Amino acid sequence: MSDHAPDEILEKDFPARARAVLSPHAPDFARLAEGARPAAVLMPLLRVEGAWHLLFTVRPADMPTHAGEICFPGGRLKPGEMPLAAALRETHEETGIDPAHVTPIGFCAPRRTGSGHVIAPLLGMVAQGARIHPCPREVAEVFTAPLAHFLHPANYRRECVQWRGQARAYWIIDCNGRRIWGATAAILHDLQRRLAGATS
Image (spheres, rainbow, N blue to C red):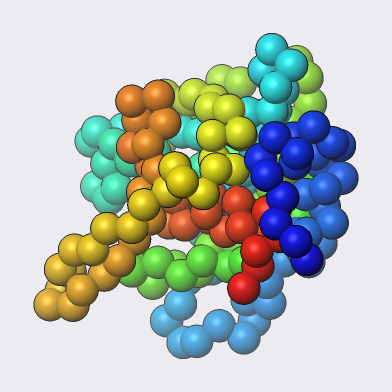
């Protein structure tokens, strides 16, 4: 498959293009290693002034973990819950977006985190006019950013830190004065590569 420029990707029917390169099936969490904690997030895709945007949440500063970080709405699966249901449920709890207003498009590759979670990232299209009412206990702010920004590979960079005595590399992408990093940036980078046709 040849690489495609961001402008070319967005000029065509983007949801159909994304559906063609993403998996229609969630990862099989039944085969996770012992101790791994399954989770799911929704990458909410919506139209803003005629352009595709992604919606992000900002965690409150007083949260016990990942305080102030930018992420996609989502969280851990309940016992017996499937990733699709978990992503929609958590998105509704955090942002107020009704699951009936989300059209699932497909899953990116599962993403393991240093905290032991394995995240199933689902791209889903939010209907025009869907109401957004963030839950203040879980979300300090919601914002959208142009999808086009996340489709340019030059906007991503790798940094390395020492964590628990080991070197750990992670992705960072800056957008409109905001810094997105860690698992969220890794999910975005995977989406960018898949849409560009560079899946290796």
